[in-house]
Length: 504
Image (cartoon, rainbow, N blue to C red; front, side, top):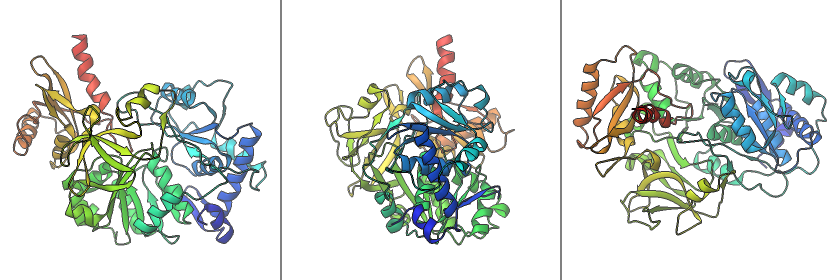
């Protein structure tokens, strides 16, 4: 058995999770106790299998208490991103039907939150007091719960992803355990570092999955490039998960700061969530060694691909072969296209999902001719050996003069410029071509926003790309709206220009 309960019995004093700043930690024995107490508390509130609870918290130990309680109570657990406004959080609370919310004043929007009498709201301090009054034994009729994640909302309102609840008593997550044990070689002696917010799917799934393995999980409150390197050395981190923007931030550190730490303990660095420029990943491989694994998947759970460091070095830019479901690349009519031909990426699998309360979005995720083929909205192609290469998001494509232009390729190039920290490429109104390509660049130096630098970047693109793909203009933004899960909130960037055009 691989489950925190097993380690609570075998090694109760072993640390299950600790905050990297030393502010809090929890051992496996205490985690078992609090998860049981919280499950009893949820039952006392009348919550039954299929009900929903939520948390709106920065990274903290209480998140693991509510997670493992939901896992034993047959509940859906909905994390809410801390950067959302009160109104945005209220939408998720209402849409999910959450009956309990764990949150605090550390979240900026908490004080302005309006909630109905139908939901119980507690702070972590109130939560701790409440749990202390509950039995520490397992609740009766234990049944597994499921995370109900909400999409990042980068192209519209967040979508609630509702998966079927598993049947039976609490059980191992067999598919995940096979992945981390056999693919990444993980075991209970590993130490895992999580630099990302736990309200995102991958950090929550991976850290709790590592607890099923009996590891110690080190959790950062917020990502900091230099601090991440210090923690790898201090705790002899063996496994961690990152996103490409974290790679970029680390590579942009001065060499004397970047290279001073011992990172030789790392055995597996896992990344996903957003496309990684080939040059950035190659630089990370050169620095960290061939330990960087990548996967492509979504909270929808409809499919996944994996690629090892060795496979990627042989096929730079690929996100691997399918390990869950089968990849199908289709045209706009829903028909499969030949290898090397870009199209919408679908997974053909037995796993189903729905977007809660949104039949249109659910229907849009289905192939028009094959209803069991589902998409996350990405465009890509497969090579002759079945390796998947992602091109861009379908919703981000720019159509200029009838030519399809994929912004990701241009962004991947711009980010390699030594004076660029981040970049967003969008289509903006053009009276002749419909849209034209614009780059919005976050410079490494906040004072580096001159017309000369804009001209240099346009020339840089012309040296490497077809002229039809090159930006016709460059603007500067000192802080692009990139979410801390690595995804660019491109809709906000694009809306600035299209709203101005509509107003004019």
